[in-house]
Length: 153
Length: 388
Ligand SMILES: [Zn+2]
Image (cartoon, rainbow over all chains, first blue to last red):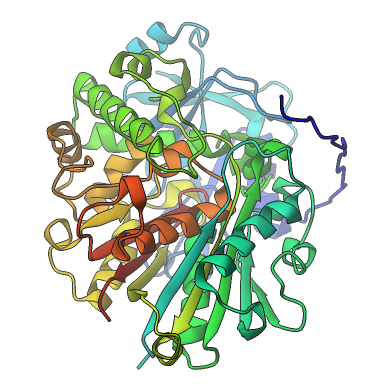
């Protein structure tokens, strides 16, 4: 038997208050009103969602707000079936990339509205390219999870 | 024009769950090994580069200060490089640039992580901001599995073939780990074990994913002049590449992953490589997930897009194949993240120096090492050769 050495249990708890700034603030105010906002790049013309203050490809300020569609197509997905400390969404869940109609990037969010406990059912139902639409929470706080998930149309 | 630079020695800890040592002692184990192996007097080292994934993995900030003693760095210039999963290759790049610039003749590069001391996925999830992405990425497996799923769909790869190829990779690497004295996970697994393992993040199952490892790796980079003075054999740096893309996961295509493609292109250009599958003798691809490993083969030009599963099943990338990949067992069997890219580099160096022991690819002269990091954002490559 090798000797067991001692360990120390320790914890870090640090409070933060992060600034959203004007663009995220407006985006989340939109969420509260069941609206999804993007911004448009004046140079490449791409509609970016969530809204940003500048284009990550052209590095110029975006100049136009666009309320985007709440429906789109599934680009990719994964079924998460494990836990870690402080996990903000309880597993099992489906993380997904969704291309909302009329936008030019994928929105990262959840797919739900089906029985997630049954993986065979999930696999039968969830297909790339399928149409999905936003399902809103009744109690919205101006948060990304004001959309509970996207469900198959 | 950069000066020629070579790696003259490597040191690895025994990787695994290392609750027998505190963190600086783990780092010291790798550092002492490389000094013993090379016979270099620590006093002759000009500078030290150190790195982890996020420092918060172990709950201690700025670990290069914590490890200054273990790395014998007091009185020397010290740098920290931290690029998430690609940290290890970025440490190697930093050391390379330092020597290649002519500002140093001997640089010690050290990568380290003690993943069993914290909650690795909780830590990694903090790489994503808490406005938007943190809620959905599900640690490292979540994003990389979504990427693999996108790739599978793009090329219409049948599920049966895909699972067979992933299982083949898992079996091969788990077997290879037995030939690597430093590897963490040493278990024999069958194709059926892998294919029927519990789903972690679909399509990734338990035996498709790397472990949490504690480990450190130390590598000494030397100038041409110093290598001649010491009369040492070296693994010469032939090319380096690093490339990334936009921060948000949904902003760029991950199936045809430009960050990986461009990093490889840069490195191939410097190394004069036109046909990597033919010209490379071995590759240490950063492969925490079997599925993603296939995507890297394609992005690095080892084969066409959508073709990797077929070639995997033919054994092209196996130990006796045309281009053996991860004969060390790779990241799949050993992943102390901040060290992992440097371990890939060290393994590539061992191969071209003919010192890889039981997992030596006979006659290997040109090797690629790789690591990637972020929320599917950045890739780094280093190419090493036996000839200057
Ligand atoms: Zn633009």
